[in-house]
Image 1 (cartoon, rainbow, N blue to C red):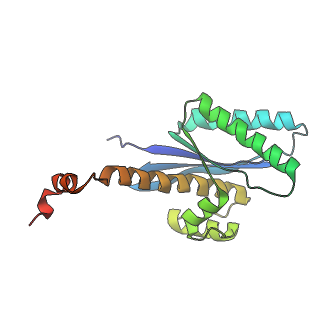
Image 2 (spheres, one colour):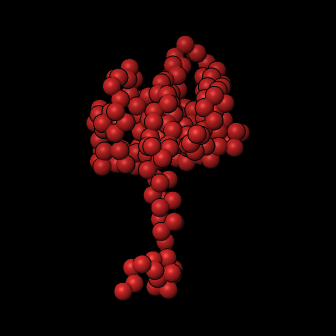
Image 3 (spheres, rainbow, N blue to C red):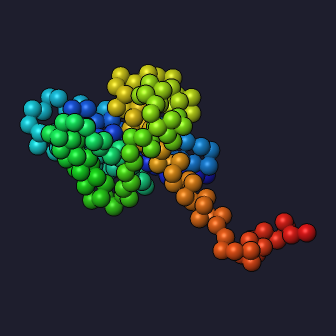
Length: 186
């Protein structure tokens, strides 16, 4: 028996280390498919790093066939050059998803932390501990970039699920409510 599943690819962009994670959503729940990092320090040239990011995201899309792509938005820091490099890394990852016709959604770091822990100012350690609890993960990541990418994917799942439920249960007035809930009328 084949079950319908949604696969979400979550990306924590970076020019030195990029985190990525894939989760599968089925009627049985959420399952972690893969969580890892792409180390880019070996490539000295920034453009080579961008090419490696693009290739890796394309490879993940080809191998796992995600139906959704979620990425962490760059936060505004004091170093403009770092932010420009991070924006480029994010851009090539998004371009890889767009080329494969995978819908892209972007989330702020605060929104991601809040959706996982309930606290938009949570630490990376707190986010990972909550992910361990939610997804029953035993292993400790070598880099929090991988667990950050997992948090991005799970945040997208939560946001998508709430949107679907709101649309499914929405009504356009009392007449519509009564039509959708005939057993609740006394």
